[in-house]
Amino acid sequence: MQSEQLLVRVAKVETWKGENRCTNASGFFFLHEGTLYLITNRHVVVNESTGHRPDSIRLLLHTEANDFTINKSFEIPLYRNEVAQWREHPVHGAAVDVVAITIKDPTTLSTHYIAAFGDGDILTERETLPPGQSVLIVGFPLGFFDSVHNLPIIRQAVVATDFAHPFKGEPYFLTDARMHRGTSGAPVIARIKRATDVAGQFEEQWCLLGVHSASVDVSDRDPALDDRLGLNCTWYARLISDIICEPVPVAVPVTPAQQNQTSESRNLSLNSFATSN
Image (cartoon, rainbow, N blue to C red; front, top):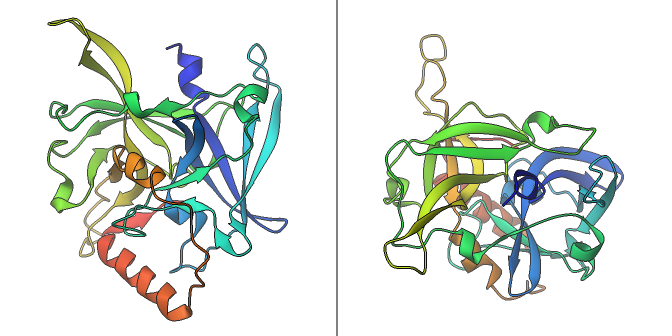
């Protein structure tokens, strides 16, 4: 894979409420059985605890393979008839900070120069990483990017926990890197040696390890004496397969009590996170 094909898998995400821009974030494309999805964090599209509820997101996409200065805005509504258009994890729901949004325009791939991750880019349950594996987090910190060529920023990090054992039993691992708001929803990737179809042979591939979500801190840290941990939460990429196989959202009205319950359950799961839209 050429480096530019890797970079055009990632998109700058702007959230909008009517004609008012709300936040900047990151996202990436995922192709499954011919359907294209945008993957990002749940707190990018809705955050009950802060009242963040945009009604659309806008992407800036390349339209020419040979000229990255030519781009076009692409809008995705987040609600249709007041029904949320993203898919959450079928078991963990809002407690997993990852969503998949179906790109319903069938011409998107043919009319834009974008690429997508796929099922084969995700490590299987049998594959793991060595301690301190170097990874890249590709996104748009504080909304900053190469605005001439519409290309993201690449931050280097290392896996800070045992990849084979989900941290504290939750479906995420930690990375060690200096991160900023705006990187939420960015893909976490690495060059991994993987077995080929030929016995005993391996080749290096870019693999999708997870979805960057938020910085992690401790509640009892003394800000006068202790620096921030500098650690970040990354949800395992294998969660994406569960999410995109979830049925289309059902038109069920959400009451304020249900919203509070969802927010409380999510805060319980993410009680040591400093969320970074």
